[in-house]
Amino acid sequence: MSHDRNDRLNYALIAVEGVDGSGKSTLARGLVDALSAGDGALLARPCREMIGVFRALVERSDDESVFYQDVVPGDLRHSLYVLEGLLQFRYQGPLFEQYDAVVFDRWFHTSAVYCGSVIDDRAWYARLADVIPRPDVLFWLRVDPDLACRRLMERGDRWTRVYSEAGLREKIERLCAGYEREMRGTGAVVLDASAEPGEVLARATAVLAERGLLVPALSESQ
Image (cartoon, rainbow, N blue to C red; front, top):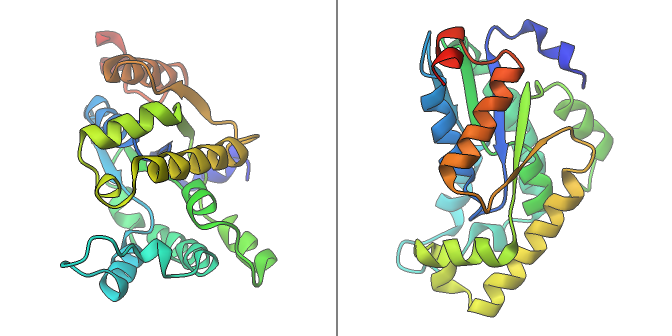
């Protein structure tokens, strides 16, 4: 999908991708704050409704070891995330239009990395996915698996309470390898996740300013 497919959007569409522990959510929140001039920016996430459904169906409050990702087949999750993505832009479009920018914490590359490929009717789902607008800027926080694991352990992430240290590292290594594969050729702006959060945010906002996606007043103040 080429950039001109976004000409129908009246707001800047920005997405941040990366494995758990890469600092992705921190950057997304920082970008929303940086874009707060004018009509402001909205923080959004893809596929939240279906994730909530899967959790309600599979997970239990008294057993943290059960993850919906380990029960619901990955190709089913991926296909339903594509459908939700279409509906999200269809029905939340009026909300998005109220802002100068919408910043997504994750994008649909996450589905490919965490769920694998759609198996049945792959070509049909690919056509549906192509209707979803592409971000004006897609940031990818590239992180070393050791650093991602250390950050998850420091914040007491649920994964660290279920997986052994070796199991967590194997999972993060696999996901990082998936991002290396999926982000190839996407045109994503690669950011070094090992840098301090402020440095990462400064680099990201500089990219937005270069592309004319920061309002002039904010660009001049930096």
